[in-house]
Image (cartoon, one colour):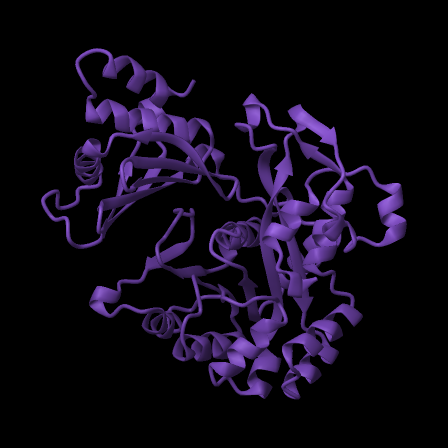
Length: 405
């Protein structure tokens, strides 16, 4: 039984619930389960409390609706927000305290028609390890990516949905460059927000309220003599133009951009009015990344996937493979999964890719060109994880869109 269930059960039978203790119990359960987020949401006749475990929301408890105002008030006090303001979104930071391991909390309060919804993102410093070798990349991808990081100029882009591990990969890349070069290199970042304070890195957080945007920060940083620039996200044509130009003028630029695939990044930048010649000259690599859940080793069992999914696996492989999944147990909270690993595709811009970019080759055709040049697709990476018994076909299909196979 969770801390929250025990506390609610005991207090409901006695004198009532103390909000601060209830909040501590909710946070303790989320931290103990290694959840990335805690969702507290008013529903029709109850408060739903859910944790995001390995990327998937899992219910923790249903609470009485009468507690919503007290819960939101407590979280506002923790994050130094305006406690009496209920009609506008608010965001703030707090610490879970030494009794909960000093986990950092990013608290977001959002008004809904039923009350305020609270989402708490949890950052555990003790669980943060920025080591490229520990991120689940296969040896070929890891070697190619570290080769890109050894370049002195050019633009490296990461693409993937929110929560796919892009920020962790970028921080790990910066840590790798630091370890290789020591104090002889100047590294600057522009982020929104700064999620982790890195030693010996000049980090800045954009502030839209004061018109401190990615574009303005980048333009100013170019006069700060940086060798490596990290830009949290390329969101608009102005930022894209400055980042691409920086990659051409002797800087190594690492950033993220939203696109369905690694090959699709070219079309996205062309739509931002980046000239094909400049794009082909500056962009040296694109890493597409997703996170899939690992099978729980404590309840692993052999099973047969659904026929529709099996048909996507080559027949000769099907006949030789024992597919495995977690049955669900206490250690994995009944999900069958424990922890996550990355699946990726790395497009390295060689002469053939650059020529295709100059010709404005459509995304699907460019994807095929990259495969011919040796790119391992995300589907191939995911399938290899499944064949090794570390995940399931269902999980790979959940994360990777069918049109990317």
